[in-house]
Image (cartoon, rainbow, N blue to C red; front, side, top):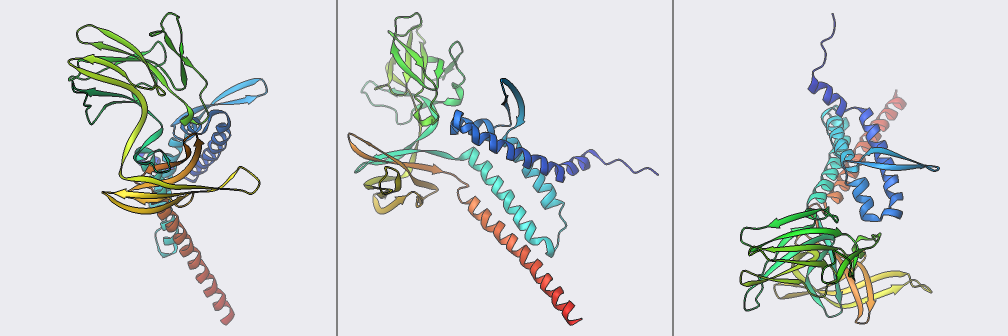
Amino acid sequence: MSAKPASLPARLFAFLSSYGLAVVVLSFLLLITYLGTVAQKDLGLLDSQRKYFDSWWLIHDFHLGDMVLPVPLPGGGLLMVALFFNMLCGAVIRIRKGWRTIGVLISHLAILFMLAAGFVSFLFKTEGAMPLFEGQASDQYQSYHERILEIRRFDAAGKGEPAARVIPMRHFADLAPGKARVFHAGDLPFEVQVTGYRRNANVVQSDEAGSIEGYRIQEVSNAKEDEANTSALEITVKIKDGAEQKAILWERAAEPFTVDAGGSAYTFALARMKWKLPFAIRLEDFQRELHPGTMKARKYTSHVTKITDGREEPKVVTMNVPVRDQGYVVYQASFSQGANGEQSVFTVAKNPSDQWPLWSCVAVAFGLCLHFLMHLVRFLRRALQSKTA
């Protein structure tokens, strides 16, 4: 009598829970971790992370002498999803339940929780820089990577709206020269056409065709650290009365581009995304310790005051001791020195899953210790039984 063939859900579950899938996923994770780490030398940290670790799939060029062999590979995003379901099906659902496996089960659940923490962080984490001179205070931090096209309205008295209209970078980052996109809103007396986005560029004088008011965008090679890039793009503001005005928006521009339309003035600026903190940080004193006989930093220390609703609280921020409050974390990142003195650079992050990896590691350690302890007890019990026999 022939066995009844397994159903499609049963075969899918068997595949997702198999050791073979685990071996393949872990092998590919090892490979792309190596390739992504090596690629940082040429691509930089951000581009390497996006290509190898944030993607669903990628094409890696293997160099074999003078020949280049493009090979498609699964990206880190796809591999982490596969690993999550493999552990869920194989190490949680399929595992034999009982007191002997309780430690292993706790450890696997904790690893799943850690993977979930990475997914939450990828979706919802914001991170940026807050540079401060001594005596300076701020309650805002700006993104290292995300740019925005910011439109703000000013009335006849010169008073600006408290909230600006923002076009996120994901809507114009693909608009290379020759490709354009139009943005509009029902309550605005104009529409904006955006084109010619360059991730890193200078604005130079030019009398060539296509230049705008004697200037054009000159693209330069991307820096390996994305925060060092200065982006630019071209806009055409098409007012509803038929008039058009063109401009180049550049991150380093001294002032925004201004258009008069519908009885109001509107400013246009290309800038980094900014977020507001529920408290302010004032830098009181910055200290830098160097390794003896070198210019290599040994330790950065910032004495700051955290201001919350007028209440001041002194804090000390070092490389390994951040300030945490209301879901925000303020780290000591670096420093710079210029004509205005020393400037301490803080990294500010808001991450709903900030502490989840720590809790996961504690749970993994607890589960493994419990598992090994139970095995030790059984081993000692058998050893005593054999001696008394």
